[in-house]
Image (cartoon, rainbow, N blue to C red; front, side):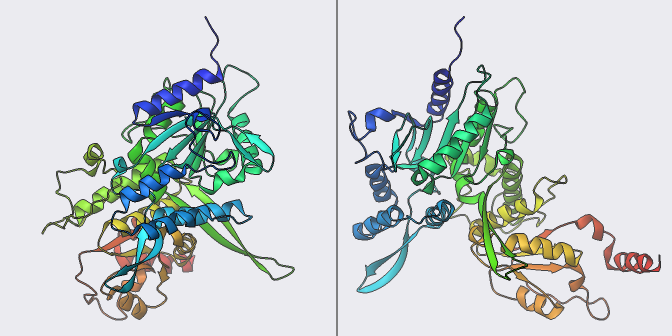
Length: 461
């Protein structure tokens, strides 16, 4: 019986991706000196003709000049900071590239999209192995790259579990070497995958090894059997075309935090790129589905998960109008400690803001410290949320924030809803698109009075 090799694992991964609709290309064939070259030099990591064709196809209403300028915009990203480049590209990819066009003699703003997130099948997915990259004298050849519309979004590094000297740790160290020696590849990187053929994990460009996570379900309904290789589950569950684009657009966050040096007094900004774990991804999409049903955007008997067959797993539900009746009960997401609850709430908010008609998101807690903590997490994720959250300090401010016609992410404690006197609650809004997220809701289930009594009793002890 022949011994399995890394090449065998590579070919199995390629075959699995082909079964999901990826087209396979052999890296040396499309090299600058290959039989069918698709790039001008080994330093180039983009496939320019494929990008151009995709931009033409997706943005037919945008003049060619504006399309070309948008393509140049992503090609010009070149600061000395790898994460800064990555964040810049991610913003352009997920928000569209701003361009100007002439309409009836006037300049009008518009956006060019490199990827069609509304229709995943309107994109080109490639799996390419042995793609040589030469940068600053370093010659490297990642095992597998996944391209969408000519952009290398995913790096897969594979090792052989049968070889005691190679593990997922080895694959991780290889990714770290690539980042140091061919950083140009990672301007466009969404996330990376390391595997030994059985064990498989994914993480972002600044994830340490311990932050690379296993994708444990292929469909979100049940965890995969322990007899199934993690690589197979990850490919089927995470890299199918609909889920991959959904993850890239809605489940990656660049979290900013400020830290002041106690000696110099200078403040430094740290950015950490985070990718949703499998349980966060499936829970958030279930919550989005439930919200759409509760608000009447989809009938009670219909599930958005069934829309995956129509290439609409990313809930690009444009054109849907709310039905007259929705039960307004979004439901409960049960979390365990350490499961990333706050970040799940961020992912949910970022997605529901795009799906609904400019909703107001109201986040309610029952303690000031919890309100502050959760607000800080949201405030650090402004890029994904596409707006600044606001923390209501007083009752009157809360009322004004909720009386707006549309939009906004508002934080408050539930106590601010209690009137100064009496028990008459005024109507603040009759809009249908205000979404309430209650954190630690079980502690307020007995009403304001019980909470007040509990506080008073605690003070006497």
